[in-house]
Amino acid sequence: MGVILGSTYFLGILLSLTVSGFAIHQPAVFQTMMPEVMEAGSAVEKQFQDLMATFGNHHRSFGHGALHGGIMAVFFVLPLLAINALFERRGWKYIFIHLGYWAICLILIGGILCETLVYG
Image (cartoon, rainbow, N blue to C red; front, side, top):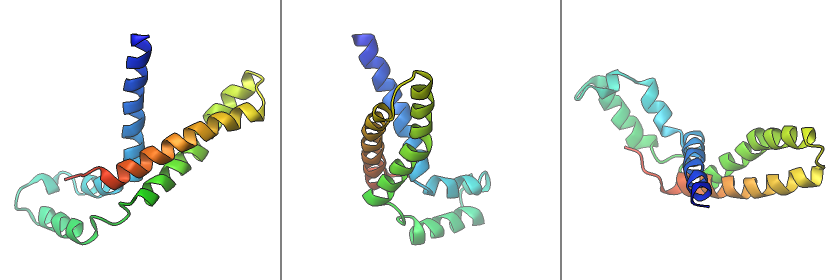
């Protein structure tokens, strides 16, 4: 039981990291300016700081994260669940019950992370 709980905890962390990368867009701006943004006092670092001061909090709400969690459920989880379930000869009721569970989980994870996680 300990191995199962530990494994699910670790896999939940991996899932949360994936959702945060999908729902929070600010790190992508930082990555596009690499490596010059890492140089203290450089023009690119100043430009990044100005950009984050102006637009850094855009799309950082529960609703935005929840939207991305829902998108992940439909376009990532649904195909995986459906493919496995169809090969296992399971019905669509089985698929939609599991999709509902994962949609709720991903919507909550995306919303909470997008609202509360701080970068920078």
